[in-house]
Image 1 (cartoon, rainbow over the protein chains, first blue to last red):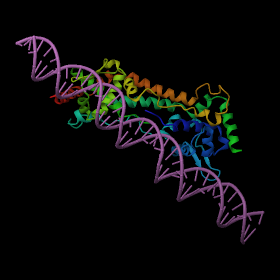
Image 2 (tube, chains in turn blue, orange, purple, yellow):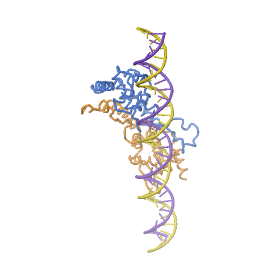
Image 3 (cartoon, helix red, strand yellow):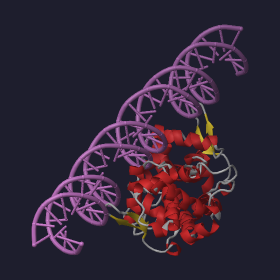
Image 4 (cartoon, rainbow over the protein chains, first blue to last red):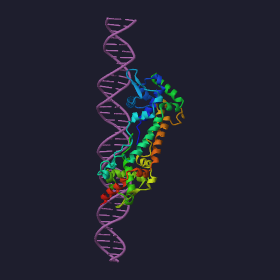
Length: 159
Length: 159
DNA sequence: GGTTCCGTACTCGGATAGTTGTTGTCCGAGTAATGAGGG
DNA sequence: CCCTCATTACTCGGACAACAACTATCCGAGTACGGAACC
């Protein structure tokens, strides 16, 4: 089981957008330069965040991206599900109904099997942890030098 | 983020092996027939479980697989990590050190960034839930008819 | 008849192709700022 | 001086390759049964 790179990209970009709030909107190219990422593919992921309502995109010559709402209102779960999709990691194919269970009468497998229940419970715990942390929490726990460093580097990009 | 089918296969096969304990060892072909799965690929997954010490394999004409220890001692986390690998789903590439952070002095990024910490915490919660459930728990919560159905179907396969 | 030996059939184990999903890129359509031209 | 309009630069959105991972399969190593030969 593997999570795509886009999640790390999206979270760090959201942090940068929060710190560069008064410079908004920030175009994709500048944002990509902050972390040395492939610009076009990063844009694809930022579009995912726009569709989820986390970012707002501004078209036009001075356009770019900005946070759509306050960092306190953006949870890590929001970002993860926006980029990775809302499907569960564990997908049940009901293999218990194939082979030995194929000839059983209707209603035998009305209840979900314990395997699915257990996996869902674990993923729920994972989601609860992610939902408990907001972008503002990440900003608070970040190194004090991070905002200034981001702003300085961004100023050099524009110049 | 997606989990492979092998996890569902592995868990259901472990349940079947527990119920067919006195028929052990069970060869791959019979086990695959129980759930109508591709036999050779299933065997690959069972080998993962053997490497993890969850199953024991018996070679030879009357060979097959059996549980290596009691169901009470097999957690869902054991099975999941045996099949999916022990890597974390979220892999940190330290993109904060690229671009804006590339020219910073040594020691600036000594501490892990908050993104990694948060993701690790979430995955830890997921693992704790999986580790809290054993194969014996799954057997207890399964439909009362499941063991008998499995044994009946297996008897037809051998006959 | 009992014992030993060998061939056979069936099993695990690791190395090898096919298919799906993710990563990365490119190009066309649309939009707002910019500057020129005319009223 | 103000308004209109074309140009330009930037974004969105979908379509198109490259890569990796998962899925699926084939052949070699090893073991127990069955039978034949021998004592």
